[in-house]
Length: 214
Ligand code: GLN
Image (cartoon, rainbow, N blue to C red; front, side, top):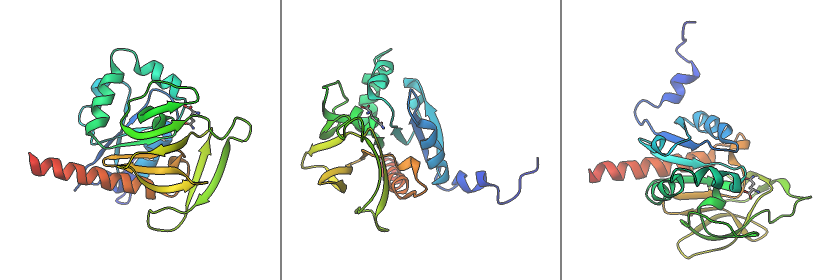
């Protein structure tokens, strides 16, 4: 079929700044993230093996089940490779992904990459009443943000280098630490792309700094 000039693929190609966003696709809602980043104007690729991190400018660690993701990551040294990658490259971690990057995981304790200076409690809002859609204030310009919480963890404390961009009942739901952005909710499940745009801007800046150094 002939492509028309306004085909969506043209809009998403971003020919002047081709940013490659990888989405860790071991388990969870990685497809929704890939779609959201396509809609936000990035190129996206699914990452299932350590070598697929090659050439990626920014990585998404999706929501899902962190224990299951850990099981996959513990095969063939992926956990260690991912830890080094996330320490050096922009990463957007949501929900289970946020649990994976935290310094300390509670309820129950589990292994984590230890990159986000935060303590996080899994399933902190209980099992019965554990999903909610709330519209809450955020420091991201543009007014309150719709946040979808699904068996969400709670960030119970953060270190001094962590900037809090939104709160739920006094606990951080969206935080930034240098090149790391982390949310306890699911930005990929709403049509608002402000969180994705913020991450893309972080990736662009990180990439531009790398090119200046090269
Ligand atoms: N409860 C999940 C966990 O502990 C996280 C839930 C989610 O990612 N929506 O890993």
